[in-house]
Length: 483
Image 1 (tube, rainbow, N blue to C red):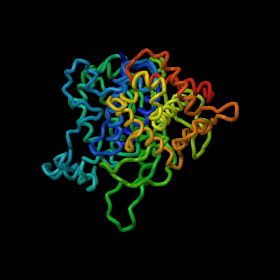
Image 2 (image 1 turned 45 degrees about the horizontal axis):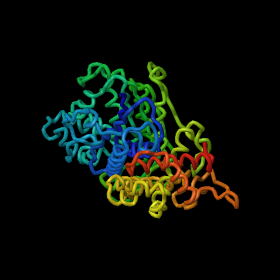
Image 3 (image 1 turned 90 degrees about the vertical axis):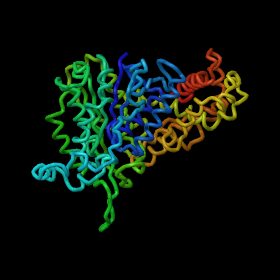
Image 4 (image 1 turned 30 degrees about the horizontal axis):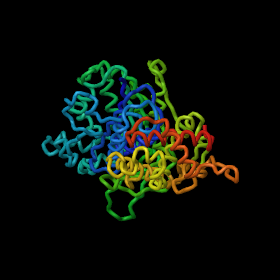
């Protein structure tokens, strides 16, 4: 069974994986693999972006496991932790989506043993690293300094987690990297991991399979800026004015040293209003961005290619909107992207809007009475997990969609605040009148009841999800006529 290992490196890596999980929840198909294994690499163990993505992944996994293996539908894609792929319960690593750095809560100078070096070696270190680099604590990441990150991250290759990954890597599995090119962790981590995986002399297990593995990468260019401190104020901050220069330097390096990648995707945008400058820890929790959603689609696109199409080739991809607009709707995406995600996202949005606003009043509806849905929602833990996925204010679907609408370039295809199902899709309204009332609570219940008649499963959660899948599919096809 082929696996896709997605390395989300740094804060951008976590945010892109968050959008990927939303696409998988909506039922977007990912080809050529039976399981996605995210591996988040970030030394900042308190990073807000990372931790809410981890909570989202855990919640998704609970829901997927409750539904069981399926070929399509909401939450059908298997997203697993690294430790779970062994299958025999013998893994000696932590059951987590995050690489364990073991708490490197000390300054970089202590990490490299600066005070124990001779004078000549100290002079060399002083030449390569600034005093700020040397004194910064590593437990908040590398603060836009890939030269620091490359030293620290080089040590993870011989870690138990990386050896476990390599030991369980099989021929046919694929690798995908997600990282920014203008920061510290991502800019350092991607080329370093790639170099080690593609080195024929690597000490990692299954070296031949790793060397030959089809590999893709999303390289995220600058797409946001950060507030600068007031004049004369001493502040711990990241200078986003250097993002473009760092990106150019990294691209120059990639041009000559990026070997072994079959497909490289580039994504970026003109930064809008500067965000609050939070170098790390829990306060680094950026709103979701359209760039991250489109970056997640690169993973889907990469898996659409067959082995033959990727083997022996090195391809480069960029993404462009049909129009340079501030409020991006489905009509502004190319037809290939719309075909991949529009219907699935609309169906999931209809499901979420009905489930959270109308379902509590449906206790006497046939689809609900048949499985004692009211009692199941009250007593079964998986329904609590679903509520978390949809409505948790920190990481849930509602929060993600709301964040996407707060940027200057918004993803405005779906209306979270709209209560009329006929107006929830921004560029596709249903015309209603005396003879056509479109989609409303009554028509939704009718389709749910009809769907439940063909569902033999008496498990309340499985039956409910299946009923919503069938009902939303019919409503989108027959009422909204979105294809």
